[in-house]
Amino acid sequence: MAIKSKNNTKDKMRTIPEFANQEEEAAFWDTHDFTEFWDELEPAKVKFAKNLSKGIAVRFDEDTLNKLRRDARAIGMGPTTYVRMLILEKLRGK
Image (cartoon, rainbow, N blue to C red; front, side, top):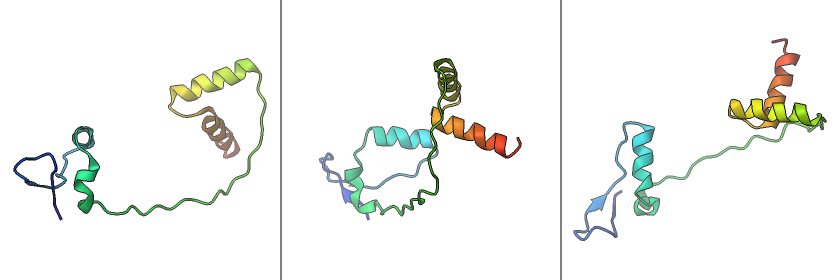
C-alpha cells in the first residue's frame, strides 16, 4: 500500500520504485527516508547461528602480528578471521 508523502504539496501517493541495480537503489535511499514508505516495509526474518566455536589465544611477536594485520587488511578482513582461515586451510591440507 502506498502512503502519502509529507513533502509533496499535491499530496501525491508514493511507493518504493523498482531498481535496476544496487547503485540505483543506494542513490534512492541516500535522498529518501524509509519512514516515508513505512506501510510498504515487511519485517525481516533473521536467524542467528549458535556460537559453535571455542576460542584459543595465540601469541605472536610484534613483527609477525603487524604482517598478519597488513595481509588481512589487504584482502579486506580482520586479522582474527584471516588467521582462522590460514589455520583451517592448513588443517584441511590446502
